[in-house]
Amino acid sequence: MTAFSKSYRFKKSISSLIFSSVLIGMPSFANAQQDQQEEPELVEIEYTPRITNTDWQNFKVDPSFYEDPFQMSLFSPQNGEDSERLWSQTKSIFTFGFAVIGVIALLPEDISNWEKGNILGKWDENVKNPVWDRDGWVINVVGHGYFGGVYYQAARKSGYRQWDSFLYSTLMSTFYWEFGIEAFAEKPSIQDLWLTPVIGWGLGEWMYQQERSILADNGEVWGSETLGSVTLAVLDPVDAISVGVNNLFDHEVFTAGTGYISANEVPLANGETENQYQVGVTYQLGSGKRKHRKYRSTYSKVSGDPVDVGVLGISFGFGRVHFDPVWQIPDDNWYEYAMGLYLSPRYSLRLQYARQDIFQAGVDRKQRYENYSISNQVYFYPEYDLRPFVSFGFGESILDKDYDRKTFQLHYGAGLHYKIATKLALQVDARNYYSTNTDTTESSITTTLIYRFGQGEF
Image 1 (cartoon, one colour):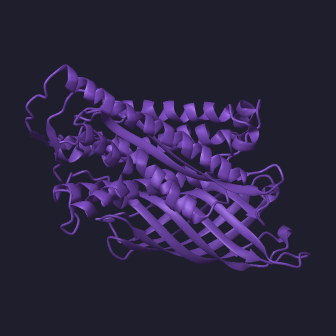
Image 2 (cartoon, one colour):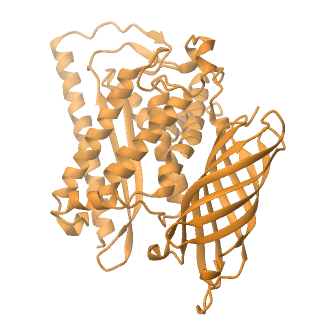
């Protein structure tokens, strides 16, 4: 039996044991209540929010609030946001996560794959050296995007607007996960720090709106209540289970639910790696009071908030790179991918990744050249569709996936941005990359097609 199967089986058993103990205990509680008193007459009370959920779209927000569209209400709610619910969710996530760390630390090393006696030391070493990880796109894009969506919805369903929900997702994915729980096992991932909250914003908002649309249609999909229930469980499995348990026992046992899914490539002592998958669910217990109400939700996509998923943009580009002569690498083409926040017609912030397989003098095979960076773009004449801009940022380049051959770089450049439509733009830019530790300079020119989510730039 592999270490992966042992680890997975244990984690699955623990999750099943915890959840089963809750389910087994509930009927006894319900029966005890029935034995002590007669069943009260049920009175159905319909109400708008689901459990403790509130909704930003239903708040009466003063228009002056949007004069500063990027102000943060996360720590000082001022429009009716349910901060108590969000705080409850946050405590649940932290408590459960670190409890798991404690349990795994007590396991034999052949099951946990952790070195006993060095857990804190390993965390301290890992957080100092974030790396560009080698996980596949299914993990980095789909898995971490979903994870970011879980964090996002915790805030969104507590009545926070999209911007605050994104900030909450950023804080949780950064400090709770990448530099917290996950850092006990591996180094924080550079791209996960960006992709988890950014993709989580888009995916989380989509799941949030799809769920509300289904609920507004009496919980049906294509006229089927069963298909509607299955779809709701897929969109937000934790919340769906929470509501289901409340309905099953006719008690408001759970006030909210949250959870996580993680898939990580973990290095082994023999130099090989294995994939470890972990699924966790945790609930905030409610009062256990009798409930006599149905769950119903209003539905609205209109909020008047100028900051929504339209600021998210993904791009694909093709260009040419000129290498410093010291590398003895001929000029070559490269492909560039980027995920960015186009916060206004004047400014955007992007994570850029470019790569190409190249030949280097003295090496008889192709090597993978990679360049990744955080880049700022400042646009001029934002009222026009054609805008010149300057760019600057920092990042690293790496050759042949060898971390000993990576170099830190600063970059700067200029270019033109042309808005084709509200959701499409074309961008051409030239950049110079200067390495501070090797005193080398590379340059590139790249043409990029940008796609904006939501309504795009309007």
